[in-house]
Length: 144
Image (cartoon, rainbow, N blue to C red):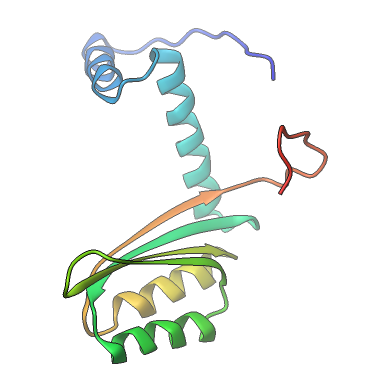
């Protein structure tokens, strides 16, 4: 991948705030931070337009109760989003963290997330969405 240079004009106070964030987050420099911001902006725009190739991570914290766990499984099976994987972690004697990786269109992912967040006993839900364009033909250093 080749890099392309370009110039950007921004207000001085915005640049100062940006540099503070770059330093706090430990970025190598402004360029890497701008690339990260651009990727996030593009991904969010693709999510909003409902493109195919949409993926998400649904992070859930809930009370460890057998009925709720059964309801979570049912919602995943009944949904139209493709559940790629689920990671279940016991974070305390009473609470679990579940991370569900989803693939599908915006509507089906949001529907599943909304059903999960509405279950009794769910305490925290965070949906992290992103868009991956078709990467067929791209060479990788590793193969899955």
